[in-house]
Amino acid sequence: MDWPAFSPDMSPTVHLWDELNSQVPFFGHQDRLDQLQNAPTWQWIEIPHNFIQQLISSMSRRILACIETAGGATRY
Image (tube, rainbow, N blue to C red; front, side, top):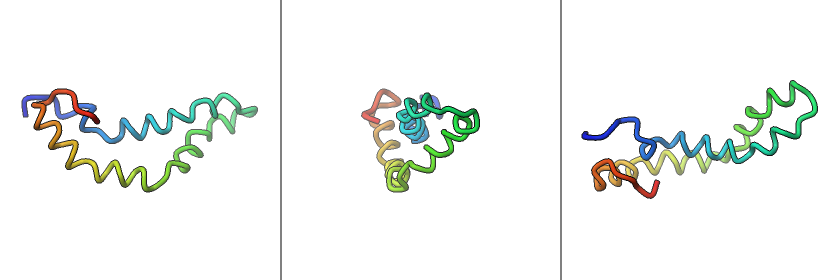
């Protein structure tokens, strides 16, 4: 391949982090340190399994899109 193997277009984990980060306002409303420390774990558990499965299922489309654009930007 003529482009980096670690392209964000190829990484479904980027979308997982985006999903987790969408819960950031929740983190600021914790009164106790233990609540703040556990908030990311609680939010991680709340990510729907079908969301993760969709990311996994999209890998073949991601690879094809990356090949079609020769490593350029994709819709992912």
